[in-house]
Figure 1 (tube, rainbow, N blue to C red):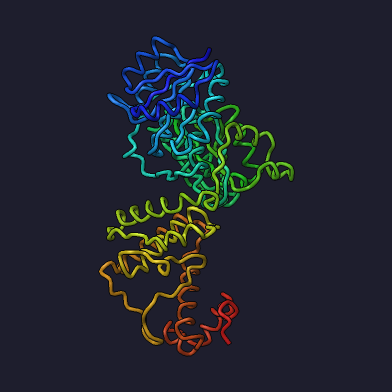
Figure 2: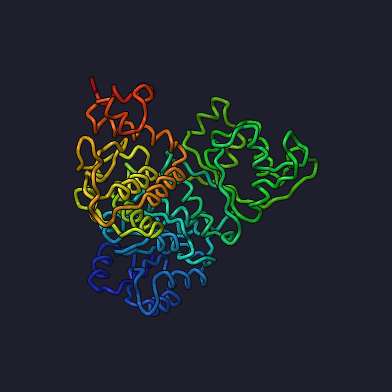
Length: 480
């Protein structure tokens, strides 16, 4: 006979769940308060505890922490109708077996409970500890309520307590660095440095020096000793983004650090010890790169100890509105702008868009919408999807549109937002993009009249023709 302790302040829910779970071989004991549940747990020693997070006189998270402190093998499932990112991550970090949203219980409760009871004997190694930083101090937020992101949050909670290497996979712009920062934030290394480096953005001849440092005179231009990223992040976490683009020559030195915890600076003979947790990320399929001899097989297995896959935004459309609202608040706070709102039509438009650039594209879209906003409510026409070539309403053939709303940004604010967009999107070449956009808008404004467009842009017609040819604007807009 197995025993389940079920805790929830609502007696109607307890009755429903008890009917779902009780069998001839499974007994269900119920409680409505956290303190009573703790006493029952000590007395009954149940096989499984299922608890609501919102309890009195203390929370389900606190109940979980107390029980796990008393019994490190306790199997606990938490549930809530209003689960947050923080509560999901905290519960998994404290050793919860799973975290369920109440609306999913008619479908998920019985299978998860069966799995929890089956896996009870294997829940031996989980430990509980409190984060060293408050959530308020954590600047980079993971946002999402979709089922795929709930799984990501759970994995973050599970891996944060260890020093095992983590491989984060997913498309460009899906937020892999945010996941890496979350793992670091919830780990015992959270007070130590977190350093990120993009392996694809640094030339091959400089990458080794960037990672391991160099001695004075190691090569032309090395006028002084330089401390590399491995030394700078000693005791903390080093995030190697786009590791699939790392040259094979550098891969061998990374492997040595993972195996031995030591390396030598470029041009030096001294062995440097380091204690660094490595989190790697890639948008490539490394198994294919290994098969093509473009990535070391031994390094792949060293890095692929724990794997977290971040789903693309098109596979979690229910997160689009949540993310958009988050970015609106973030931009308003950082740039001291009025808080804009999204219309229902704008939300629907964004949820139907496939977002090939993922979360990064969504953030950039919201930033551009704030620049182009003509009211305090963003309508579908204000959302620059795709190539962001929509022309704002208003104006005449020879005059720019007027922004009559008091939320009109200053030139300085607009430039700052564009620079932030370029900073967050490494693939965006800001000046060429602006050059193309201004040319495209001028051509649309003048309905393809090159003389008038050149006049608007303050250039000769010959220069305008070169730009049109360079960016394929005539072909794109089918101007004759």
